Image (cartoon, rainbow, N blue to C red; front, side, top):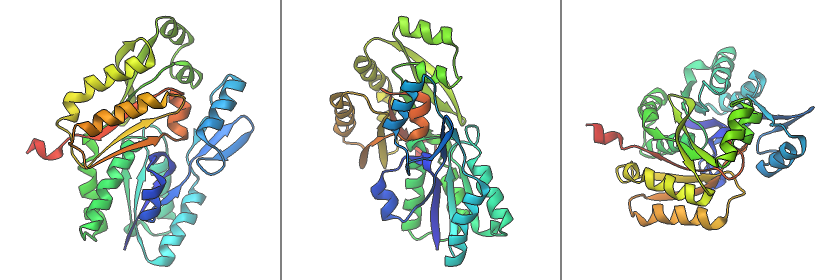
Length: 289
């Protein structure tokens, strides 16, 4: 039997995690002198409250080898093969830590690690592909992993952020850049390319209007996307009306079998800040044939 494991950055909705008995290994969130466990004893709203009060941004840390070993011992006892999904190895050590844990327990022949080269529900899209393969009856761990890895380059992850303050606090842009962007009301599109975060188009204006422009720019890609699923993911502190509007526009395309709306977890919350919204989907891999 193959069981899916993942770190807590995947942001899949709770219902899917429970339905498919997915094992989540949480990352850590360091806030001052205290350390919290992602989605266990800290929430994104609590992160905002602390960050605003302390004028700084929390730090995240991968789970330890001991954490991974403890999780793997459960699989070993049950005789399960493990397909693990982790945040991009350019952003965190979780994939490497999980590999080392499997090696230390002598269980590597039963573990396949997928470096998503992604984050948030970009990882979730890959996990949904794995679920589909397993439901089709595939039971060879490394063949499933190979098939899933073929989809990695096709995940399209982007979002528009309302403020550069959180990225500045996290050391990812200068104070001058954040100040100028705020004064000019610049709202950058953040994209994930080859596992790294980058800046795409720069928008200006009110965030709701920026989100509408962002969606319009994505539309040509959405009309050619893989039809299995699309996510509208946000970091909170946005008017519910704009979230519903974008999700409604995606549904109105009548292209996707599933349109999910999700709240992003701690990692995206910490680095992107409030008011961020992204549409995550997968390009049609078969269109290349």
